[in-house]
Length: 329
Image (cartoon, rainbow, N blue to C red):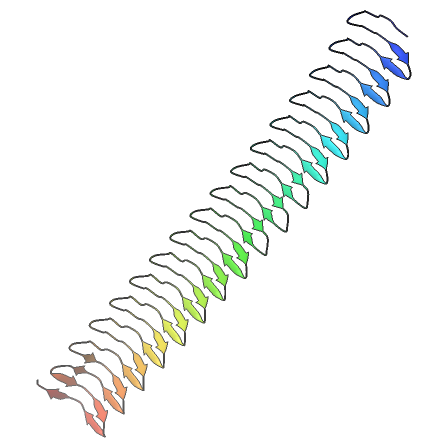
């Protein structure tokens, strides 16, 4: 059935034969409004840069295809679904194939809103400096990763959890792996809020002049340590307890080790508030001109001793008791 035919550039309004129906065909740059044959349906096809509004065949459905930079609104075949694809820098709104789902992919610097394949889920990936909102694969979960200076909000793999990592000067909010937990680590001068590994716990560590709020390892506990002039609030190891130690002129508030107890020690002119060792008790000792408030050793008790001209308030030893003993030198 033909309503109108034009030679050269052929125009056909209606042809029915071999199961084919055509509303309009133009030779050269062919234009077809409706063709049915071999299970194919076409609303509009343009040769060269081909344009197709609807094609069904081999289980394929296409709303719009443009050659060169190809544009596809809907293609189904081999279990694949595509809403928009652009050649060169490829753009895909929805692709399903091989168990993969993609909302947006851009070639070169690739951008992906949702990809699932091999147990992997990605919300946003950018090539070069890669950005990932959610990746799951090999038991790994990532909220945000940036290449170069890498930034990670959440990574789980090999029993590791990371909230924030920055390359170079590395920053970590939470890492768990090998029994290790870290809240904040900064490379160079390292800062750690919480690290657990090998029985070690650290709240704050700074490289160079090191600062530690809590370290547990080998039976050691430290609240604050500063390198150079070292400051320690609490250290326990080998039966030793220290509240405050300063290098050079050393200051100790409490040390227990070998049966020794010290409340305050200052290097050079040494000051001791309480020392117990070998049955000795000292409340106050000053080097050079020595001052002792209480010393017990070999059955001896001294309340006050001053070097040079010695002053003793009470001495007990060899059955001797003296309230006041002076020796001028």
